[in-house]
Image 1 (spheres, rainbow, N blue to C red):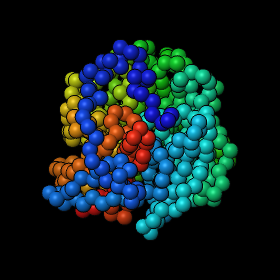
Image 2: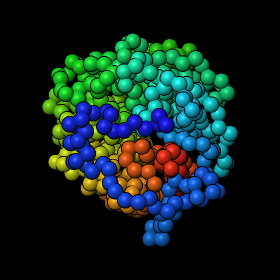
Image 3: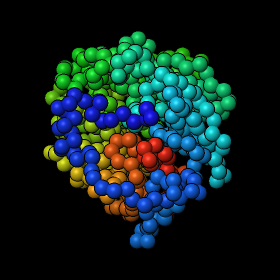
Image 4: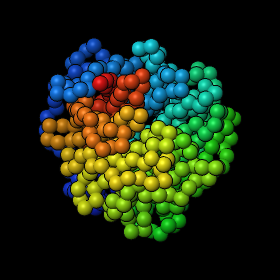
Length: 442
């Protein structure tokens, strides 16, 4: 289908074997009975919503405007109170990026952003959408630049009229190298300009292998982290190399704090320590990266499991996966000074069943975390709510059980909207990707 590349393709064979044996990424077991979340035909569903009789949180189904096979969802809350959902649909030998808006309890008719037969589409490096205060919509996807497996560029488009028309795509990276460019984060840089950060392989060895999977010093053959802004005419400004050596294929994430956007990513040292770092754009310059916590996870290859970040004023929440000391662990850490310092992390989950693939949300009275597990009974989507200072767990529930296994289920999305948590995810049913969704209230 072209919507999910196998994990081993992103590593050298011996590294892949190490990861599979260590973290038991492929568990065994049958498919559970399911209930559809996006269609009245329950026999075609992707997941089972889990009862919550012993929890103060209530789970409800959320109908989606997606009727065909689809994957790689992105869900954001817009400043005007609407939700925006985007997704990728396979179309014969091509792919289409579509979106719909949610307001007053219903979805708008899906609209096309773009389509093409030269895209790079997989489960981990996914398109994103954003809106700026002038009402413009922005979207990005990945476009092949050469025949090498991981040779692709980030392309960006803008719509000034709510998605009716879209600009001609422009390349975010202008280096002209047949290398990997992706794992993008977007944020409103001003009323009408967009901020964008991405992992950039222009200093790596090219697109056939991932940069840095065999070592190398800072600034020599490594994946880098870069950022820039784009104005309404899609002109690039203020491009900066933030970090000269990062993990090759872990997602980045960004949150708006009281002192500017705070970017989270998985760093990488010459000794192959791959812990989570943050950097803030302040007074026009990026601060020196700071470690959220010194897990000291020594890993010879990218785990494809990036951090998630959320903010509420000065308060910041970061969630991430680590396997330091060979123990898969999901952690949360909080900062009360917009990311200058983080308190000791709280362990949310541990063990071989833990997949990570975390998302987080933060409000005045609670911190939320969403993640995936996979055991002999299949994959499950987990959600927990903590006190905002992480001093105690308030509730924990299993949102849904999925039919899909392994990496093709991708990264679930969590958004707080009108006092309700909304979750969207990808499942694999009869070999095809489908979107599922739920609402969680308390």
